[in-house]
Length: 179
Ligand code: S3P
Image 1 (cartoon, rainbow, N blue to C red):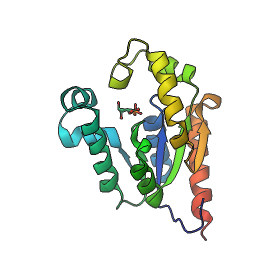
Image 2 (cartoon, rainbow, N blue to C red):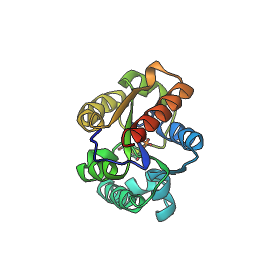
Image 3 (cartoon, protein in one colour):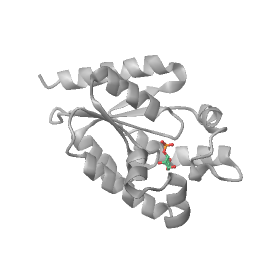
């Protein structure tokens, strides 16, 4: 991480089903930070589910809501933010996140992602004739964005407790660097 960055927050990015919300809540608890999830904020602002927003307003409208939520969060301190899987593919979002957060990516292989999401129905992008192919394609397209994270943690090699521990350690290390 560059020396001129002073992250007062932690943002979690990564593909759908990598555990960002679960891990984010637990990391926030461990650090005694506030917790926000961008999908939850969008749902509470609009009064609609993510599926309804995609169906009624379209994906571009959803991406604009994501952009607005990142701006809204940019004044926070001592906060952990879990982001929707597509949020960092807008370079403006990723750059803004990096300006006020240490950005950590939860990484998982497509087969493992499929195992975790196959029995869930709340992700409109996976309502596809061939969801496994869709996961592989989306992940390949998004990899260059995810890999711009300050920290990359492979969740396939660790249980949730270990991922949380790793995040806490990485955040403490990153915030100690500037002292
Ligand atoms: C999306 C991921 C979802 C949600 C929306 C779009 C994506 O969030 O924002 O369905 O583009 O990958 P999760 O990553 O929390 O599932």
